[in-house]
Structure formats: C-alpha cells, structure tokens
Length: 408
Ligand code: HGY
Ligand code: MN
Ligand code: MN
Image (tube, rainbow, N blue to C red; front, side):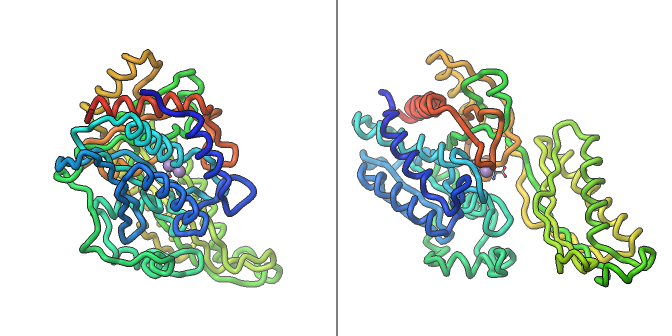
C-alpha cells in the first residue's frame, strides 16, 4: 500500500501558495488564509467520509471510521498555522502526511480495528497571542476558555474575544477533550527544524523526548526624557536595563548542557531615537529536555532580571505567559516505529526535539510518538526552511505503515 506522491505534492503546492505575505509563509490561526486552507483540507477529508468536528478554539477533529468501530481512536495530525514569514514545512508536512495516510487506507479499503482521527491543532505557533500550543493545551484540558482572557493579540484584543470574533462559538460542554478512554495514542510527523538529520544524512528521526518550555513576559519601566538634555548619571533607562538583561541571560545558559534561552520579541515605548525610553516589554523563551534543569534556569533568569533592575533603579514585572513540561514519549510506540523503519530498511536515529510540538501536550494522557524528517541546513521558522519532497514521501509512508501496524 503506497502513498500517492503526486497527490501530496499537488496539495502541498496549493496550500503553501496561501500566505498573507510574499516572503515566506504567514498563515496565522483564525486568519482568512487559515480559513482557506481549512476549507481545502476539510473537503479532502469529507471526500473519504471522515466526520469533521471543530471545537471552541478551532481544533479540527476528522474521524475516519468506515467500520463503525466503537473502539477508541488512534490519532495522527499536526498544525497548519505558521510563524510570521515562516517556512512551508513546519506543521503542514505532518497534516498532509496524515491526510495522505487516510486517503491511501480509504482507497485500499483497509479495515481497521480502531477509528483513525486526523487532528489539526489551532494556534500551535502562538503567533497571535505569544503562547504556543493553545489548541492542543485546550484539547488536553491544560487550559480552559477563561484562560484566553489573560492573553491578547498585538491590537490588545483578548484571545477570548478574538477567537469568537473569527466565527468560533464557545461551547465547552460539547467539545472533545483527549482522554485515555477516547484515544489510544498519537503519532505526529514533523520536520526536525534542526540540523542533526541533515548533517548525519539520516532520513528519519524517531523522537524520545520533547523539550519543555517557559515563555515569560518581562516589563521594564524607567524615566523617559529628552535624549539631548538629560545627563547620563540622571537616567533610568529601561532599554539599557533590558539590553543588559538579554546579554546576561545568554551568558547564564552557557552553564547548561541542553538548555536554550531566546529573546526574539521586544517592544520599546515610545520608540523614538531622541527620547530615552519609558518602557520595554520583551519575552524570554526558555527550553530544555531536562525538566529540573529548565526549572532551575528559569529561576536564575528571573533573579538576573531582578538584580539588574534593582541596580539600575528600574521597575520590573515578570509574568509567566505559558509553559509546557518536558514530554517523554511512549516506549512501545517508539519501538513499533523503529521495527517498521527497520523492516522497510530506512536509515533512522533516535533523538530528542528542541522544538515543542502539540503531541507533547497529550504525552501525559495517552501514548505519543513523533517521526522527524530532515530540515535542509537545519533552518526553520524562516522562508528558507526546506525539506526534500522525497523525504516527505518516505516519512509519510513510515507513518502509514506504523499506523497500520498499530491498528490494522
Ligand atoms: O516554538 C516551537 O518550538 C514550535 O515551532 N511552535
Ligand atoms: Mn511545528
Ligand atoms: Mn513552529
């Protein structure tokens, strides 16, 4: 049973042409571009008789159950939203591989012991509200609708209001939440977004652990004043303080083996070249695959910011925007994927994921596993993100063969 490369490529080329920007892929959840892609994929799922349900925050659940099995479902899928000016492969590759697996099963009339469900998680990237994996956290009951009131987009509209304004009706009592009773497990296929597989010329990564993550918002406030008339010794400059914090945070992480710290988002007010800033807001993204080290690093990062703020007599507020624990993936599922990879003579390696992924939100509820594909040059979250389409075909075939091995 072989997946159909031509059909996948047609889907991929059409969907990746839908973007809000010329450069890279910009397809935020709840945007018009997101709607266009959802319509296209849902039509493909309806063609094979999948039952499609959309929950309050826009997660898509497409249940393929031709035998009317009453058993719990096996899950596949990923996300279709992107970072601004992002790549074409992050998320979408896993969704298209899953769609192709369902189509191939359908056209070969394979009878399955369990229903299959293709999940498309909303707001995985956090591009609207600054917090990743809103959809999968909601499906895993790690956040509720009320939590959406604490998050807002760049226009200051709360996630709670914005998602409803984009046509999603909040009906939490009817929503489908993942549980050990209704789901048997999940395999998510994704591009690596790092350079290990590409550098080692290995086709497949089988993931053992997914990094945990903390996202903090740091607000530094000082005294705004005239850039020309204010002597240096009288200044309380929050941009100077924030800059020192960012340099010191990058120094701090040198003492950790697998942790990473990133400040990728910063806003300065009033952001005028002849005005000493009044306020700086920046996010800190902290990750590690060792939970206790990530916790320690986060505490040290907050201490560094507090120390610099008090030395420079600046006001400081640090708020945890979002977090996810390190996810240890399921041994049995990993071994199954490895057996199938060996049987089909693929060159693969076991590895960890520095990127976070939706299935990590389910890993403490059901068995989950991931299949990685090489990212050329290890580039991601960038218009230069690239993966060889033959690698996508190889990975999609492994996903299909692993699903059949598990529920066929
Ligand atoms: O940030 C991440 O790791 C993921 O790509 N959202
Ligand atoms: Mn992703
Ligand atoms: Mn991503």
